[in-house]
Amino acid sequence: MIEVRDLSKRFGSTLAVDHLSFSVLPGVVTGFLGPNGSGKSTTMRMILGLDRPSKGATTVNGRPYGEIRRPLHEVGALLDAKAMHGGRSAYNHLLCVAQSNGIPRRRVGECLELVGLETVGRKRARTYSLGMGQRLGIATALLGDPQVLMFDEPINGLDPEGILWIRTLLRSLAAQGRTVFVSSHLMSEMALTADHLVVIGRGRLIADSSTTDLIARSSQGYVHVRTPDVEGLARRLRTAGALVDTDVDTMRVTGLDCAAVGELAALDHIVLHELTPRSASLEEAFMELTRESVDYRTDVTVGIAS
Amino acid sequence: MSATTTAVPGYVDTDPYRTIGLTNVVRSEWTKLRTVRSTYWTAIAAALATIGIAVLGATQYVRTFNPSNLEGFDAANFILQGLYVAQIALGALGVLTVTGEYATGMIRTTLTAVPQRREVIALKGLVYLVAMVIVGEVLAFSTFGIGEAILHLKHAGVSLSDPGVLRVVVGGGLYLASVGLLAFALGTLVRRTAGALASFFGVLFLPSALIDLLPNSWRADAIKFAPANAGTQILNTHRVHDMLGPWQGLGTLTLYGLVILLGALFLLGRRDA
Image 1 (cartoon, rainbow over the protein chains, first blue to last red):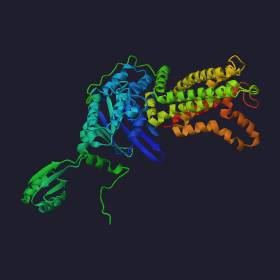
Image 2: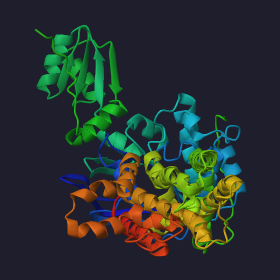
Image 3: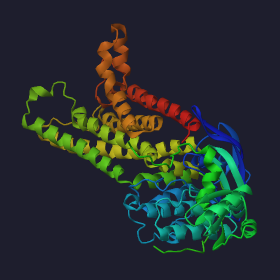
């Protein structure tokens, strides 16, 4: 279990983390979601005692990180794939980390095997692809067989096979009753992996709820309608208070559900060819949620230079 | 690489209440030091420099030997001239031992594994220093043996039993370790490789270049206490007038390293890693 209480971190004039509070519970995968630069990594670094909070506190299993006796037995972390010396082999990297916490040497081989690096364990880490580096970072996190695991953007740079592998691994770690905390800026990925989501933007908590609730709450559903009389139906629906985007023979209706649209069409004897409820994509839901808190925004309008 | 892993085998920690011990960290740091190539390259460079310079210098001396040159000739010091080159290689290793961790990001892995930052870095320094004392002594004694054998061809050599000579040779190894401490301390303080190397060379070589800029009354002390001047007194068989004594000088150089290291360790606990 990870607890974050009223956590703030100031770098000069910017408040990277702003009075953040949440808990990460065991047995489920908790996604830590936010746009780039929203303070996810900083928060994770504070949980691990690497950065000191300007205000507030964090605990892992009830204790501040610095007071854990042999941290690798309680917390495993992947902060970035390159948190290792490139000139050292994977085996020796794991060995020196294991030795610092009194973890036996045979565990090094086990962990290499666990992440599928056993055949390349003697090669220098510099020669590894990004995906192999991620696997080695995960092996490092698993060395002490910890109850709490934290991964910062673990799927960055992975191929589809690697992404599937991580997703399966995260879910099986949670199924074993461990606390699994994974950051990402990809809502769609988290929707597939995480049971619970903590969403932040500009260092502030935006949402802390189960994934299904969050999607249901934040996705703006709409009704897709196909009809030969677009103009007539649009007029009718607008007078009923709906928002209507029309196309040649289709329209997108927000503010009314399928039943209401159908009934209004029937009143005016308008023929419908299609009436489908649609939910907005997850990415749209996420952007909706974090719209106010994105640091670097690009307007997606393309102008023609004159 | 296997595509999927579903079961994650654990292992049973036999003694969950044990804390991280000194030996755990020392063993870990020793593994780190012996598993990167820079350790071996710098040691080889240091060996080539000391032995090579001793052989070249002694051979030249023997070839152009003139008995009148023997007056005031410090054979032990002459043989160990290569230590001035070796100190650069081994000092660079001392810098890299710390800054390499920052440059690669390994430091974050190190400090999450052992949150007691000051202790980890202090023990890292200790492991490096012990290695430097061993490398330094092996280099000093083997170089002295080879150089002295060549000088003996003209009976210009000295023996370890001559007054002051054993101190020069033993001190030569310790001098390398003391310079290494300075380098390690600056690496810990500065954290970036380029900056730390620059400050290392600066502390070692700049004072002698700047001394002329000082007022006359300060000059004598500045010369005496400049880190390199102080440390190298141990390499003179006979004490040099107006300079610190051999052990006093080496102690002064070591003290510089220790003070910088203590300052760096203090900051280490307060800064974000």
